[in-house]
Length: 438
Image (cartoon, rainbow, N blue to C red; front, side, top):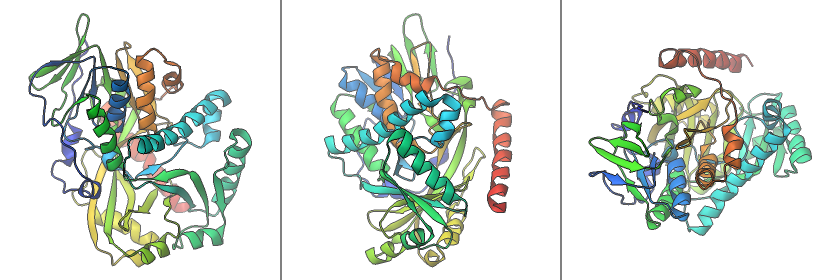
């Protein structure tokens, strides 16, 4: 009998104020909570992009779906992230080739490109107004990033026929971003940025239209294997089903037992300033690209549709969030943009993401009837949408594309819950020092 307990990481958001994405979205009404035992073909746990996209794609194939969310749809990282929609993986493509071989690396690259196109197609097909903007710029924090950028662009053009990278030299990057922190840049015109919660709500609305029953405020306590079915427990109620899809990412906790030791849950923080006028915003980021830098602990930022600077940066590794992260993030923003220091901070929030050791996503199944996808390592907007599509293929018997991810070998972080946070924190301290010395 499978019996996995779940500790409530999601509760860490209960006392937070409304974040910018929540404030600027129109909430959709779902079922307030599960208040009866029900039957379904498939029970999906988690109301983020992995769960909602899985529900949408599977419902289109005719399955009866019950989706169970511990708090609210988009409560976790799917409704809290930086909004960058990029192809590829968290690792450089050459590193993926060295680890997995050229053939699997190319398959994964193509799937990453497909992930971005799938999001764009969903936005168009379902008429989702989510502030989609083209262009993500990687800003070189170090002088030697220039050679890396040139080599990366050349390699992807030669080996993958990818022609959407544009190198920016010192004068180019200073014209593009009004900061003295950068020496060069690499612009990806095949990537985008968007309002992630509006996108999620758009998918959830379509899933609801397709008959998916979405239950909020219904934390799952365990998954049990019975003789010929699975049973998902929510308080005193049960969902009886044939398959379970788990899309909890950094909020997984103990639900799948030791599977959680394949990644490290990390808390990351974002602020939103007051709105500024268009000329002011364009003087900071000339062409309204989303930006991330090349440090190990990155800064990432962009302007929202209403011209707020959305600035993310800084990580903590304890199981609890910072009580007041505003100054923590603002200090990082002011180092990059001293000219923004007098702007009022209207919102500040955090979220938990799942980082694998090799930075590649972790897909898999237990006994072929509990399917999971997580560990997007900061590339979740595109990859979680793709995960839903590949999970629907897996369920209907086409497992090959799901297997491109599930066949990746992931290192277990040793020591379980008692040791993995200190081990990871020590490793991050080393990289922070390396960033500083560099």
